[in-house]
Each structure stands twice: as C-alpha cells, then as structure tokens.
Figure 1 (cartoon, rainbow, N blue to C red):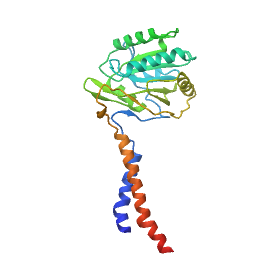
Figure 2: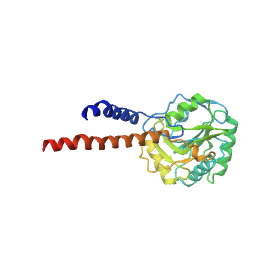
Figure 3: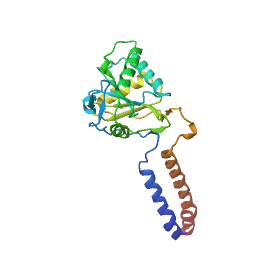
Figure 4: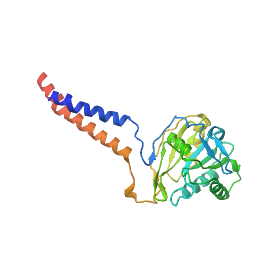
Length: 256
C-alpha cells in the first residue's frame, strides 16, 4: 500500500499543488494584482488622438476602468454609475483624483472616445475639471499589456466582447491598490479606494461579485481558473482521506 502511495498518489498530489500554485490566465474575469505596478511605458491615444505614455497620465490617485465604447451591455450603466459617484463624492475630480477610461477594443478610435467623454461629462451635475476624466484608446499590444498587468481579462464573442465590470484604484506611481467589483458603487467605497491609492496602500476586496456583459449566452461563460482550483481542492481532500484511512489509521493501530 505504501509503495502504491509513493508511486502514484504522491506524484499526483504534487502536480495538483503545482497547478494550484501556478497562475492560470482565465479567458474572462478578474485576477487581482494588488501591489503590482502597471507598465508605465504603455502608450495610449487620448481623446485628441495624441499618443501619450501612461507615466505622463498617472499623476494622482486614479480610478481605472476598462470598457468598450460600443458595448451594448454593462459598459454604459457602469459609466453612468461613475458619473453619479463623481457627483456624490466630496472629493474633487481632477484635483484629488482622476478617472481613466480605456477601450479594450483596438478598433475603436479617439473620435469615439471624445464623443463618450462629452456625453458623460454632460451628465455631471457639478462643475469639474474636464481633464479629470480621460477617455483613451490604444493598439492591441499596449491594451493587452495594461489589462494583463491589471488582471482584467476579456474575450471576443462575435461583434461584441465578453468582459466583467470593475473599477481599479491605482496610485500615482502605478501601483494597483484596490478592486471595486460590479456596476453599482457606493461613493464611500470609491472615496476610500482613492484615499488608499493616494497613500499607496492596498485594500482588501470586500465583495467579489462580478457583473458580466450579458450580450452573449450565459452558458458560454468560461471559468477555467475556478474549475482548476476547485478540482485541485477536491483532489487534495480525497488524497488526504485516502492517506488517513489506509496509512495513518493502520499505523496507529499497529503502534498500539
């Protein structure tokens, strides 16, 4: 029995631990990268079409949001919610913090980004610095460098994209400090995220309930990352039970 355990079960257990320890890139969803720094040499196109490096954009605590401007699903409600939060927060946009919106669709252009900026700034009830909420586009290389570094994963589905809704707080040095999941946000939560970002402190994620863009069949959602982890836990549990029943327990009886 011990020979079987050493020959088959233990190597299998090691493989499970290695798979669980390895970061598996999911096709869609969020993998938190708290404490990691975004690539500051990434270059994006602003609303005017100027190509600017990320290091010149991140000069204050920043709320980063990844959307695509022609999204038929959750992007518009998320942008509207951000506008509402900006109105309700007692922090001043463009002074205490800024919002960076980036389209992850490489086919969208600065003209569309400018249109979206004009629309959502017009929704604000209070007067703000228009440079406090920036809208960007980019090429596929720079987009993926930034989204991968932030742990934001999305996937093409026909003419649309499958993606999650989240706000990511980033410090002026590009350090990821907090994730705020879902469409609806409390102004207090966003304010605390901004304060933590200003201090470079990472904050624990309280709610991890993700909203996905439902412009596709819900049956088509893939949770490869979760399946691997859950399967690993189940296998580890079964191996632990096996070892106790067939190895530890008989050994104890023998010692008695």
